[in-house]
Structure formats: structure tokens, C-alpha cells
Length: 120
Image (cartoon, rainbow, N blue to C red; front, side, top):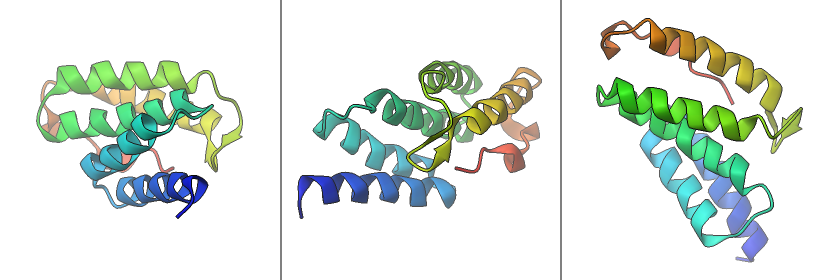
């Protein structure tokens, strides 16, 4: 497998995991991509990692960690406009604002509305 094929494979593997709600495994695939290849859009990949880990923290009832990583990923995505790697970065940022408001209203994860997780 060529480097480019491996890069695409890891990216798509992460997407598949994320879309199935397996945020930890999404993080693992994207982390491998981020650490093994110095990509031009590595900040975007790092944002995806942080987004996934935000939801891992939420699943583990670590609301402080979830909020922190959500803020970090938003900063990364602000550097990208329009469609990037098939993901609408502008729409994603709007959806992350909704998640952030939901996080701010929580005392524990029990009331979190998982339906608002951004679809990427």
C-alpha cells in the first residue's frame, strides 16, 4: 500500500468509526494519521482527534475534559473554510456551537442530547 493509500485509508477508517459512534477508535485512526504523516492539513486532522476525544471524555463523565477539547478543536477548524476532506467546516463550526451550549448547560452527562453530535 502506498503512503497516499494508507493516508486515505486511515482518514476514512476514522470517519467510519466516528459515524458509528465509536469515538475512541476514530481518535486512534486519526492519531495514527496525524503522528505518522506530516500532512499539510495536520491541524484539521488534529481538530478531528480533539473532537472525538471530547466525546470520549463525555462518555467517561469528564465534562471538564469534554469542554476543553471541544474548544481546542473549534480553534483548529476555524482555519478551514468551506469543504475540506469532504467535511463542511463552516457547518461543523455551527454545529459545535450547539454542542458547546449543550455542554454549558450540563452538570453531568446524563442530560446530554447525543442527537446533536455533528454529522461529518
